[in-house]
Length: 469
Image (cartoon, one colour):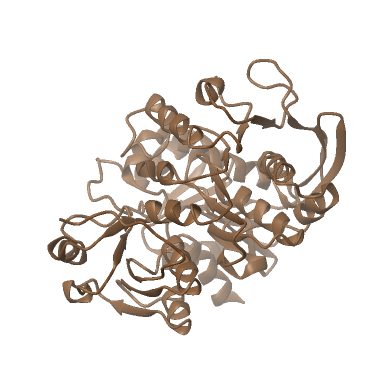
């Protein structure tokens, strides 16, 4: 019978990653390889990521086959997407090898650092993780980083630093963040999502409450004061609870520990505001656009204050942050048309991205949106339609199914039909090449094209720039 594995950085062993080419899995593999572990893994196809791993001396097998799993492996790591009929999973169980899920491994890693900082929430995890990482880097605190997106300053999503600080994005899906060992836990927001796993919002809130209660008495929970009844999440904690919010008052009418005032925006949609924390006030100029980034910045500043980052270093590091990949990422211009890419795949995220687009100088707004999973599309159908309405033109390929096989009777065409009924021009175009041709023909100087979603819609922007550039 296979057993769970206990990771010990003082005793490097042989680790095999199933799906090693994934953003998070590849990052974890690199951290272990740098710590002296014998790392290998498998993936379906060769990619830029797997080639990077191979250049670092990590053996990658292409195709997931049972013969890749050998008896000398000390631990096999799986993602949540690996099912019980996967041949490498089956072989792991047959041989009785120890194993960990991705989230469990991330938690095991956190135990090996003096201070683990885990950033959770339905939205804003990647940007906030990136901001905290940027501040700690700029302050010379040498963090180890595992981010959900590529951070330009480190040229990837992972950085191996010292043993004091481990900064990691913490996802609630399948309750993976409950395997973590955070000294500082951040909760950005709590909304309905991942309803293929959670039953409802109460089930989600219960999970975040368990996450908050992982923090020891000498740690801290940093939580958005706008979360409805957030004390239900933090009640009974022995550690300090630090609140933040764009508004001065939290959901109970009390003053947030960190809040913003005097908010203004430059022509690029980047906010200039005064951060208030107790009696202290300091001016902050963000280098990334959007109102939602004020919230992310406040959370990052609260965390870094708790970690002892000098005030001036914190603001300087934050102001130098220019965004993570796929977060309103400027991709280029062609014939005066600007192309931006964004990972937004939940209605709240889409509204935030559309808000940025409405604040900047531009012509018409073309949005290429690829919805992510049938479950999410069906659960938030009306919210998706409402969030996309401000666009001048919406183009949609087929829904990106990810791990799902049942389409639940829902399609991108249904979303387009609903938008058209409300007066927003929308076109269901399954083929990426056809979408690129539509954009090439219809877009004119000063128009803004946003490719949006957690699937592969970003490729359409790349195609547009490559063909016309």
